[in-house]
Image (cartoon, rainbow, N blue to C red; front, side, top):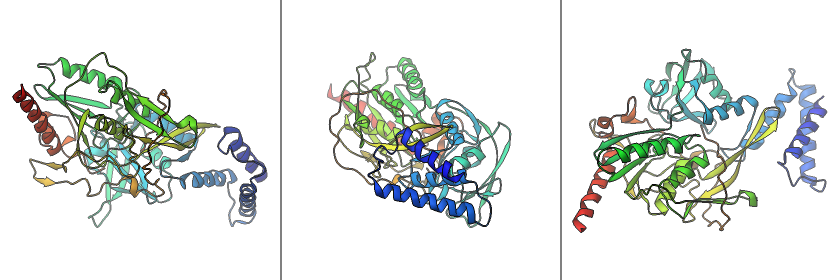
Length: 444
């Protein structure tokens, strides 16, 4: 039986096109497959307990793919379903974005307003147990599945936090995690604030509504604060559409991979509404992937001033292919580059003005270097590529899969002007916008 299963896996790989270069001439590859087959047979026949050959094969594939980089993974049906839910619909859960850091389940960021953020789970927390079950050997998707569930049900998350001697138990009641990705308000007449929490299917449409509302309210907009802090990324096409709302022409982002089909250049198109007011973009080390594309595009095109701290540094693009039987493969296919040709892989977007985070009213520094992880901290991360991409013909955006940062400080609960004005980075951004307007008036 094991021989049939191994043969099926090999054919599976051939049919789906993952080993295009695999041929009878590739002796080393076939020797490796023979060793794999022999080991599987020995384990199946001689291991002290009965084994599930299918499970062993799946884990072998998972190990192979995960050895490439932190963002490539083999997706069993449950994991593929969860990935699709993340970008398309709401779900019951606790509201955290997580990753595997050195084999430890680690919180990237709690989602604002969810059970996790209200309970005080913070970026950098290590989740060591879920309902008493140790997470040490769990796959990422398995941990996600255990933490999700129907609204109103209970789950206990045990975390280890730097500076705390004993693990902390958080008893959480699951809720419906909202898919809304854009929140906004007017900081004061003429100055708007928009917070993009992630990049999902409707983000650009939600942003358009937010911009139209702010632009029509009261006096004309004199400036905008675009907040991308703690934004873990999401769909590539949405990041392109978001940047395009503020740009009239030029390159937004370029992709360059081994295969010509993955070399693409996404360009801005003229907008029906001219938006020439100044923009300040807020970033920190929780700003990753798609949010870095937007920040990099606005920075290189001289359309926005970047304020905050260096971003996460995820400059790679993943594509998800269906394999059949409900399985999928999320594979890193390219690196992306800002309009000037910069690769931010494992380096991040450097702000034009460095402003650390703190809460003014509490006078407590909360430098997001304290516990925040970055791309360069992840095992098997791709090294920076500083070469410039070649010009490629314009193409329609494909989708990039999302990935699953220090506490959000003043932004827990309802978004209010009072809370935002106690946020040092927001306050500094507003001061700069007001100063710009004053100096512009002096020049007239």
